[in-house]
Length: 387
Image (cartoon, rainbow, N blue to C red; front, side):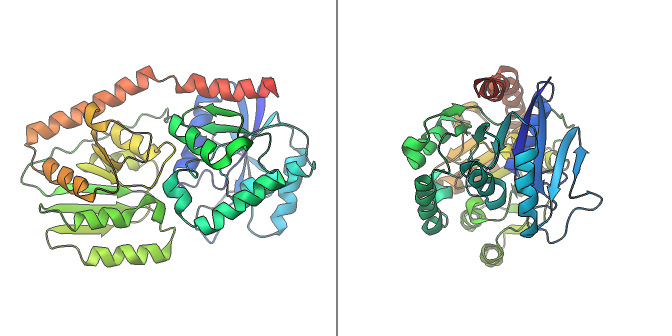
């Protein structure tokens, strides 16, 4: 019989607006479904939505793309249901996908701490929440909470999943002696192969740059707009993603209005995962100056579409210049971002076509050599057997 892993996550399919954490679970299921029976407890609506999904039953287990999913409605009344699910759902392991999510992480940890559910192994994935940039956002609230949670023993005895060595160091730095069991298992790419039509760039055209992520301070769209205000070459900048922080979006809109005439910025709203590869392929550069990522699924999607990337050095995607697929640059040097954009815009059509070919080659080579699947299999199956 397959091992059963109960997954608690804030948002799941058919949603897509929460980005990386959701894709991490979807891709994990794709890769390990032959070994593991995943069962998911999640919200009955997408990130930021006021109404539930259409045609998705809440209040009972339902099959979604081969996975049993329980959709919880909003409100305090759902907490009793969540408690009963944690207590009564037969499983070998509990898998949590945030440190700070109230309902999908803190409630299960409190139920566990009170001994109100069966003893079982628990794996927790911070999903980049401990990166310095991410932790600095609302640190006045996060750090006191972590101190109280450590005293209360909420995080004692957990197995921590780190996507990279960088994230493992972040976990040790933030959690200290509480995090004694850390395993590195990188997030997995999708098994779905998309066919895209790659755009051929002409040197006289404006450079087409895309930002595709949630509109929130962590993703740092304001920094991207600030850099673009300084470039001296024609640019068409297209922004995709759900607005997670309305006040921050107001700030970004003001920056868009202040851009010079040769830089055109357009907001296109949220985009579904099926559309992402073609959106990437239609642009000359993907720009994400994020404050921190534990993996960066959207970066993987850009590279798989042959699109060069310009990213902050706050993600696992390092050494991009040496690979020939873009740049990873420090946020304290915005001029370096400006200079790369200007240099890319001056490439001839043939040189730019060669660059895209190198990006696709790097993507194919990375997938062939990846040992991440086995590391994830070892983490989850090994943890079950050890528990």
